[in-house]
Image 1 (cartoon, rainbow, N blue to C red):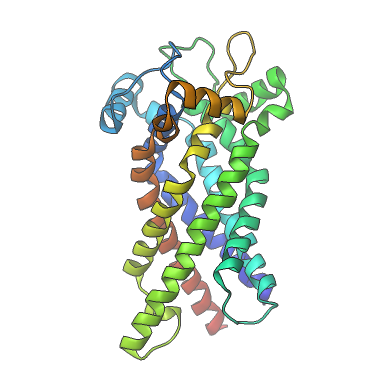
Image 2 (image 1 turned 45 degrees about the vertical axis):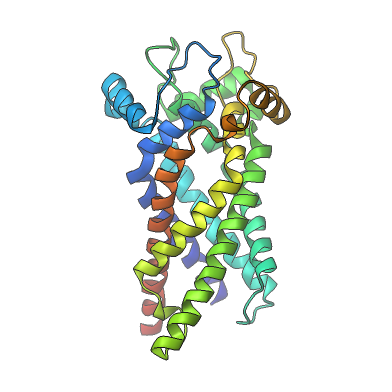
Length: 306
């Protein structure tokens, strides 16, 4: 029964991840382009703000530009959320010693950190390809990736398999810290709301929560996680850019990114694109958790009938 529930968590997470990407992807493109633009690269377009960026991309590149990297984004998000919820539920079960006792915040943090690390190693190649496709601009680049497979083949041929793990360290720190903060905040806020509503309705359990509650929980926990971990996203995106025409990467490693960004852009450089990120991920997180919790409810109802 335990294994079945873990796969239910994975399936619910994958469905939730897919649902969010389909709606929010244009903002992801804008965020990535803001993140890598350090003001010192001539062949990158410059945008004033998020609305202007969306309008400019739509006008110059069309729908294809707004949905650049959509396939790996869908794959990466679905797989990431599915694996995260799977690993997270397994870790929580292990820490609770297969009992139903409530876990303390430190165990929620540990479970989320463990799940985030495993997901990061599994999905980094997908995110690298997504970033490369999102940064393509037909007005400024001569050699374009034709698609996901062409990007994979070209990167493997020109840069070797290690290129797929560029940005793995900031990605690892991002996954561990972001997931830990978000899920710890989600679980603690969830407990508070459940306790509060249980007292008012004289009912017990997660059934007292509705979709509005999950929306608030998903959004608020995401804001907390983004504010603390966003610089890791900027570092990862800059590391995952396509190398210069001479084959030399723009940045050598994470420390090089931090040093150059701090030197030329200051603290503001580490938060480039955060507006688009918040607009994309806060509603997306709310949708993800609403879908996730409601899919789990369907599974539970089906299991009861069986």
